Length: 80
Image (tube, rainbow, N blue to C red; front, side, top):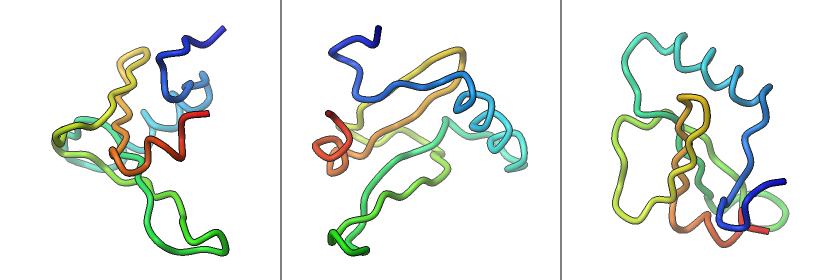
């Protein structure tokens, strides 16, 4: 059961895919960053990018050596 304090849950398949993408990048990364931008039919769309460093106020989700950073603007839309 996921913790109530964890903004998102990383499945085994997600961990494997993130590792694969980070290995294919060709340069070191802190992890990946999940964010939002103003697009799409709801006015928002999720974005995923490589993270070279942790930015202030980002949520950090780590599991099995994989790090996902969540942009503070995206947190309200991801939680729940």
